[in-house]
Image (tube, rainbow, N blue to C red; front, side, top):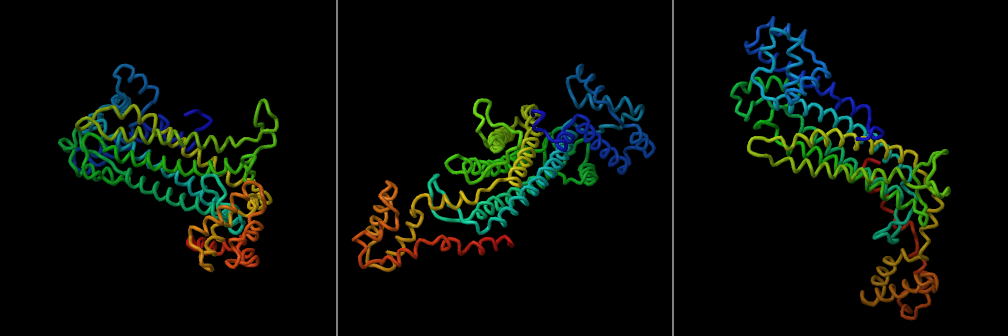
Length: 431
């Protein structure tokens, strides 16, 4: 991940220093469990705990020769432990350490991302409350549909973010698993009691069954939770991008005093932050696909997943956290042009009331649905061609004589009619 898109919290978790420190944490938990089982003498454990350490530089040096990062790690620690190193990594295979350590790092990363998602959700919900009753035009297919409120847009985002946060929590629960089950998951040299105790010490749950690794559907669930979060952020960003278009001009992402939009056109104020969020969402979906490709491995394990995970795990969390921070800044500092929003409601000359007009004709006249639809559509198309206001054309249509008078038609062109249930919708969210 490019440095400008990284965040300190995620960088710390996935740094080499922390990765090896977490691996050492797993190894020492195993040593403690063996001591409790009587396999490691108490004085040997104390010696191991006091002397166990590593050097990232030394690990890298050893790895150049052995071409195996876990062996290099074990060798580096063993050099510092001395004679009791024979008890270190006792009965383990590399993946016992790697996968259990990875679960801890993925869990910590999910906590950081979930905290950022909660912060964004708070900002979105505040905007929903602020603009709860501000009428705006609702659009389908990019075309004006019927009135709604700007607050409902934000409330819809809030509801999705709540689901995202729940999914992140579910992924956290699913990945918070350890495995100390040996080379093919039979516990041949390390009994289940050791695994249970190690997981207890690390605040993990043991996998009910594993082979050489934790099965990768768990990790795919994590990546899919991040990808779905990215999809939601992209949906928000795409809507803001549309509403910032010159022809619309209702919302604007923040634009700094010294900021420039184009090297050639000084007037440009481009939604670059939202566009960046949309682009990074594509990365997250790609990472999720790679994670799903990692589920099917040969027999009890191969390492085709390993190289990809070293890239997609830290990168995905960097991207997700950066996107959340960006969107929080955008939402908190969003520029809302309320006057333009109100003007845009009237942009189509009243066409947005067509469904209500047709429904009223069906309820208070003997017109068939097909006839009522044709009358309303004919006048709507005339309005769209610039032949007059929708209401005026309806009042002059001879086909409506005796079906609806002018006063009744006028009463149907009321924005508030469409907003009368907004409070009830917000009430579902405790607002």
